[in-house]
Structures are given as C-alpha cells and as structure tokens.
Length: 209
Length: 191
Image (tube, rainbow over all chains, first blue to last red; front, side):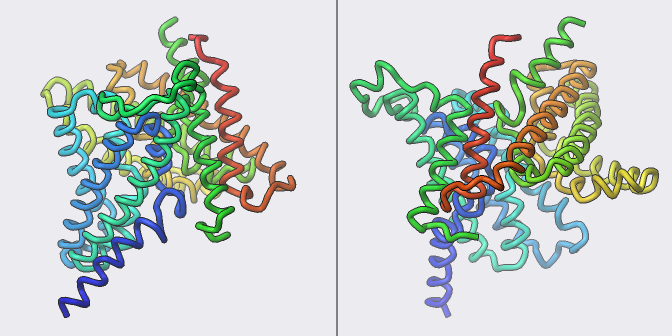
C-alpha cells in the first residue's frame, strides 16, 4: 500500500513538469509568464511564489474537500488562494523588498492565475491530500521550468549578461556592449514564447491538437 | 482635467493593458478568432472593469486606507469582483435579453480575467482618486477592446494563410501579438 502510494506520488509530480506543463502545453497562466520573464531573478521569485501558493492551496482544498458544499466551492477556493497570496506578498515585502518591488502588481495577481484555480477545481477537490500536494508541486515546478527557460533566453539576449539576485554570473563579450534590448521589452516576450511554442511542436514535444 | 486626459490616453495606447502590461491574455488569445465575438467581449470587459474599479476604489479610499488594512485588498477585491460579475450578469439577463445573449457566455469568464483585478490593483498602487480610477478603467477597457478587435481582424485573415504546420494556431498568434506590441511601442513618450 505504502509502495503504491509512493509511485503515484512521483508519477503525479513528473506529470506536471513534462506531460502537462502548464505553460508550454496547456497555455495557462500566460500573464505572469510574459510579464516577469525579463530577468531570471524575477522568474525565480515568481516561481517560488506560485509553487508556495499552489502547494498550500492544493493541500488545504483537498483537506476540506468533503466539508465544502459543491455550490459554493469556487468562492471558497478563491478565498483560500487569496489568503495564501496575501501571506506571500507580506513575506516578500518584509524580507525581499527589491524583488517585491520589481514583481509589482504581478505578485497579487497570482490570485487570478488560472493554473492555481484550475488545479484546485480539476484535481485537489477530488483527490487525497498527498496526491494533491504532488500535483501542486509538479505543476508548480513545470511552471518554474518554463519561466526559467524563457527568462534565461530573454535576459541573455536582452542584456548580454546573466545576473541572479544582484550577483553577475557571466557576461558575453560582444552582446553586452550592444545588447538586443528588444528582447527585454514587451514585444520580445511575445516573440520568444511564440517561437518556443513553435519549436516544441516542431520537435514533437507538443502533439498537434 | 489635463491630468484625467493624460491617464486616459496612457491607459488606452501607451500602457495598453494587453500589449504592454500583459493582462487579460487568456481572452486575448481565446476570443480573438472572430471579429463579432471580440467586440462583445471587449464591451463586457469594459463594463465590468468600470464598475469594479469604481467600487474597489471606494472601498480602498474609504475603508482600507483610513483603517490601515491595505493588506486585505487582495481578498476583498477578488470577492467584490466575483460578486459584481454575478450581479451584472443577472441584471443584464433581466433587463436586456438581446445584450445577454450576445455577452452571456463571456461574463462568467471575466471573474478570473486578470485585467479586471489588475486595473483595481493599479488604481490603488497609484493612489488614484475615485474619478481618476474611473477614467483609468474606461481607458483600459477601450484599449483592451481596440487591441482585441485589431487582433481578431488579423487572425481572420491569418486562418487563410499558408504557414508552416508547427506555427499554426497559438505560435503564430503570439508572433502577430509581438508585431502588434512593437507597433504600440511607437506610442512611448507620447505622454
């Protein structure tokens, strides 16, 4: 019994990262994906926030799933999610103010990120606490992977160097003198995601719908 | 007056909520396949945004700010917006059945539209007064409708174009949005 639980836990975890990657495959949660991927630091902060909220809300929602009346479940989910987002934004404001400032309104907007409400409705409200935690963690990590890939490309091309939490990791000789600032501007975000989606389809990671 | 005009123009084109702030992308890519749907969706969003901004602005200026409980704004705003959408839906259903048939299916979707909550949050972050929030929300709604209509016009033509198989659908829509956003960057520095 215990062994069986363990394998499904890892299966749920892996599912979120690859097979149903929220950004590249389901195309959910696009607003933060485009808005804060102009630097890897922002992407890491946003990913940490989403993983925290998704994990906590999935655990709580699945814990109270038998006590929640079906008719009012959506408002209940939203209030639980909003509570965790409030906790998150207070923590960020107190301990990492620069990140809090650069994420701006996109931090509170985690509330309306369709990934989180989607997982609550589709998974956590029907499955056990352990599986919901695995699902939350997996989908959260899948989101993080997507965000980090996109922000890595945008920051390297847009500034010619890579900086994480104020520490410079490396600098490309030619590009840092004449960076392609287009890539850290809003149109660059659309372009990078469009090309990545097409690329993933071309090499067959994403099946045609 | 001048200030209000600046806010309005900035919201419509310079800081367009879709192309510069990336809010409301789900309906932007989801509903922009047909011109008529795009228009209805734009009107519905503008309406909800306007009502939601005014009510959240009143709550912020008269309840949250004086009692120093600004941190509650996320929970309060989302509840206000969700119930407002329900009320608007019911009102339209009772009073104007033609409008309801045109907008009906889009209204529930708007609750989780980040543009509505986003505008409410921008208004309180910028410390706008109630009138300024109203003008800002109207500008944002018009900006959203404008971009949605342009995009759907392009996508109707794009369906007939012969593009590579892996680019079809969402990827090419993103590239179109990139070009559109690039055009809107041209408005920078106007305000």
